[in-house]
Length: 167
Image 1: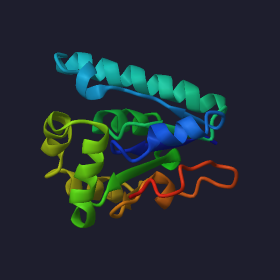
Image 2: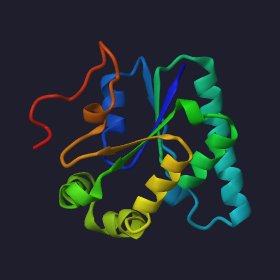
Image 3: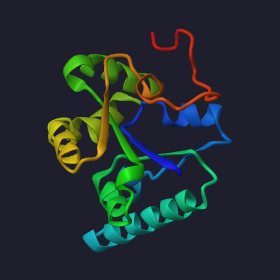
Image 4: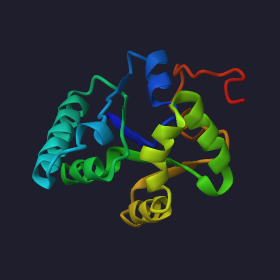
């Protein structure tokens, strides 16, 4: 069974996929850019289409892990398709690691991206996490300086960056 891992930006979805191309797929949704000027109906159609694509990929069973966005609109569509038991949501724990997470973002993007994409979501993040937990979903938070491979057991034979790249 394919596990969908919906993770916040810069928690290593793409890195883990690069190291494990056989058993993983990293689906880039580009939701903040793709839906920028869409109407509500267009957004709904977009996320329905993305969820259907993920459903087709997950249903074939070729991948153990599919990395996706944690966008609420996408998660809602996947829940409608019955993926609650195959979905793990991963968010940073901003109470213990906001500065470290901000620095991680700046290492991969710029301050403008942080201001445009991440910062507007931060106040709502604890409520989102609680809402997902209240639905009985598998929700994990990374601590300071943690990545997906630090909080999820991917099983034997799964390559991780290792070394001192957390520093």
